[in-house]
Amino acid sequence: MSSSQPASASVPELIKQINSLDPTVRASAEKALAALGIQAADPLIEVFSSGSFFDRKWEAKHIAAGLLTAMGEPRAAALIASYLAELAPTIGASQDYLNKARSAAEMLTTLHWTPTTPQEAGIYWFLRDDPVKCAESGRAGIKPLLDILKNEQVGNAYNKLIRQQAAWALLLFDDASVVKQAVRTLVYYGITPEAISERLAVLNASPEQIQQVSTGHASAVSYLGFVEIVLGLGAVLIGFGMFSTTQGGSQSITGMVIAVGGVFVILMGIMSIRGKRQLSKPAPPESA
Image (cartoon, rainbow, N blue to C red; front, side, top):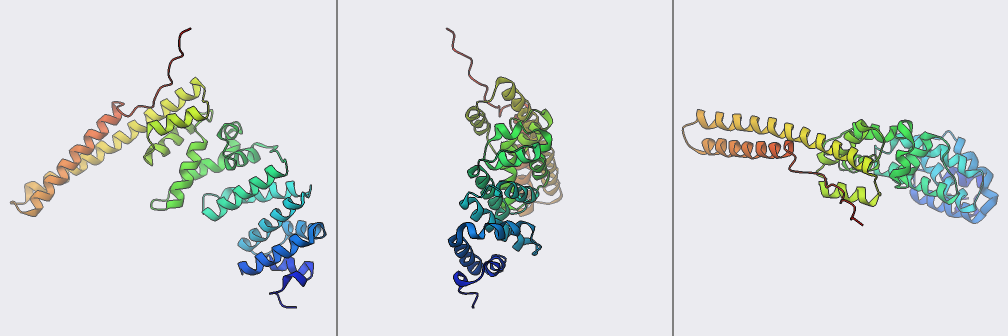
């Protein structure tokens, strides 16, 4: 029987096809397995211990996870939780892995699964966009997020996206050093104080949490200011060097422009250090 007609293929053949390199073959086999319903449950469970090679193993596991979830198979939750634990360290690598992890977390929600360890809780609540519960998972639970913050890849659009998502999730974590790292990441990517304040309001942050984030923000903008001043001074020195070593002409003009730009950057740095970019404070309670 041709693999282009998986509906009439045996269950073992269909299981083999969800490991295929061809997405059309995988999709067709998935449809056929879904039509078989509970008859395919045991073979699908076996997929989670299969030894097929790396990416295809994950493709097959993801298909199996979705089918078992649709069946309401009670054995699926533990298997999908284990699969999610495999995915967790990779979500910083690509959008595809993040999408698979989010989908797995949604499946676990459908199966009424709840995390039982900090490691499970941290990544699960991050993927379910609940930073309050994510923060409650403790340092062991947020390790994948801390790893993402530390792994900067300049020029990588996805790296920028996932680092910002991790930083937003860590704003309420009960550790000043973690909050400082998160806020510094947000400031580095140009997130405004207003946006950070708005996020804290949405999360119903406590005064203590707001103060911790505000302290982290002050540290971040001071650091940014210091960097700006150093860069500005460098530009001024280069610009005046070009201006003083040339006798008119375009190089002199270029040098002056660089120097003026450096002065502007220095002023921006001074503004940062003097706190001109403040994080909004919560409004005082109205008097009775």
